[in-house]
Image (cartoon, rainbow, N blue to C red; front, side):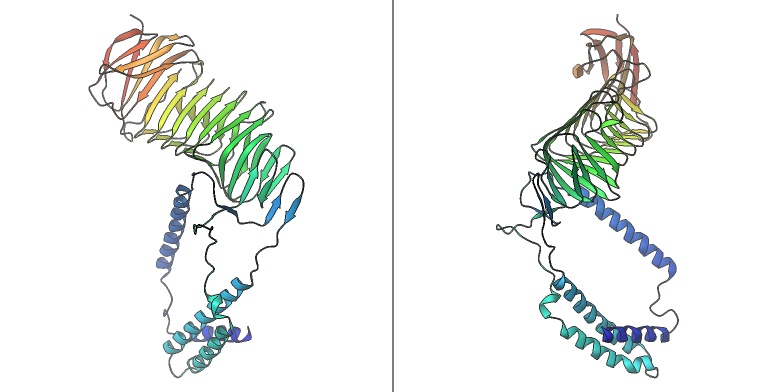
Length: 452
């Protein structure tokens, strides 16, 4: 260690003797490189989210050492860090030696630092030689018997038995509390809730869960950088809530993302279905939400790029107080009977560039024509129709939409990639034609119709 400190001191002295500007980056360049590095890290983080696997769970390894079950709690000793420390020391010594040699060559022959550099190089080389050679090789990832790399997660939780493996997990009565970042696999049924409270990103892999909280949210995100719900392929997952002292069955104070090839069913008896104080991002999944208030509601933005969503709310079907962007998937939205509510509500800019959208209720926001590329038809019935009425739209002689509204309604909204300018469309309610034939024109075509 003394030898390494001596080497570092000699390197510092040598650096001070170099010509001004030698080895020193321009401040603007350094700033640009820092920004680029930050962006690269952010892109890599998002790419990691996209790569999150929703395949059936197998070959899973928990990276932490703590284990607990319903009867007892045991702690395994953490892996030894001696090899890693030795490897780091050896690499540092090797790097220092190379740097010292470079510094010695760069410095002028008349200064003291240059004269001492060969000696420093020799000392550092000796320090590196003292470390075992095999420690320089990073340990290979753990593999299964089949030779495949294991799926490493932060924790595994059996909601039914209360057994879990991993750190950052506490179970107190009906509440399962997660206070660490990383990926957690959940399975089983529980009366109570799952709460997340951390400053890190959390991924919950739902592997067949059934959570019912009679007095509050089934999933509560008190704090997190971001929460991703991954619906494991082939699984059915149900979240149910009661009580009125919360925002929704899923209540999140931060950005919530949903993805995967599984199924998610959310039921709220008194409040919203899925509620986020920030954004809601849906990439895929088969999602059904039935709520006493809004089925989906976000204080900021809602983005849908895939999946199938059935959102039925007694107030709003889908409500974004910020922007709404739909670029893929299939959205079926049903809003409640109040004139002040909507099947689709966007408080800011509604961008529509793809997907299939079918909405019935007492209003629907129209897409921004300057940003949207996919056509939409929005029709208002007068007078309003009773609950249980079947509405339909026939476009160019083909029935594009046929839905039965669970509530009284007056608006139907339709958008598919097949709609273009100049198409004729007819509007029906309970198989009775309303109004005259209309024609599509522009991104948003609107009409007001009444029974003949």
